[in-house]
Amino acid sequence: MFLPIKEIRLKENCLIDDKVYPFNIPVIKKFKQIKFEEPVTFIIGENGSGKSTLIEAFAILCGFNPEGGSRNLNFTTMASHSKLHEYLRVARSHIREKNGYFLRAETYYNVATEIENLDKEGGSGPPIKDSYGGKSLHEQSHGESFWALLKHRLSGDGLYIFDEPEAALSPMRLLSLLVRIDDLVKQNSQFIISTHSPILLMYPNAIIYEIENGELKPTKLQDTQHYAITKYCMQNPDKMLNELGIIK
Image 1 (cartoon, rainbow, N blue to C red):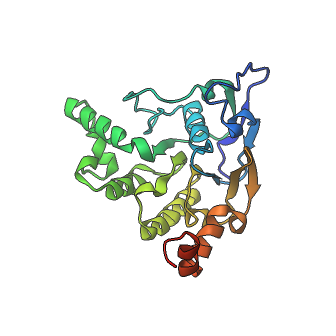
Image 2: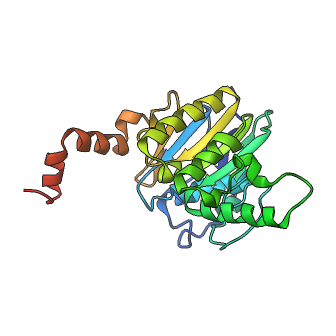
Image 3: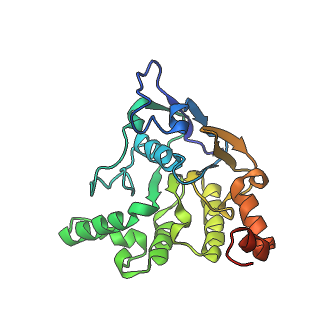
């Protein structure tokens, strides 16, 4: 099993002020460790629960730029990331990935802009956009530019950390993403993904950690709040609209 990252844990004897961000977030205040035992691991939770803060820290700890991209991209649009990564350590296996990427939905525009700027500056090698399919990411829709990354830039033997990749993708594209994830897993890849999408959570044998009462708890797809709410809404749309007071 291809698992370059086995565990991320809090450093021993850390002095933490739980009144200061990000340690005032319950899940981070209580965080001790997370284990990765399957090629695909999901972290889910409500908005503001801390999942993106955790994912960001994991990505920085693994050598990625806080705003996203490959390890070769080093830029700052606005330094808004927390210092959580400074309090964590990563346990690696003997396996080393050859490819890697941090896809962060909310700052992907910044990554695209940095690629555009670097290509304008030129260099000894081919344009960076060639590894994304050859077309400027800014000359595509948000969803198309996401898909260009997923299709062309990720090549296997990789460590891929995604923060809400569903943000720009239609339900049909999410199904395509499931297939793409599976292709890359079969090409020796590990994924750590935060998401709200029950479609992505369908991936077989994935480990799902749900943030519940300020703790990361392993769970099954059918037991997640995301799955339960989506299923109820789709099966009982009028009843749900009535409960919300939208229709009587």
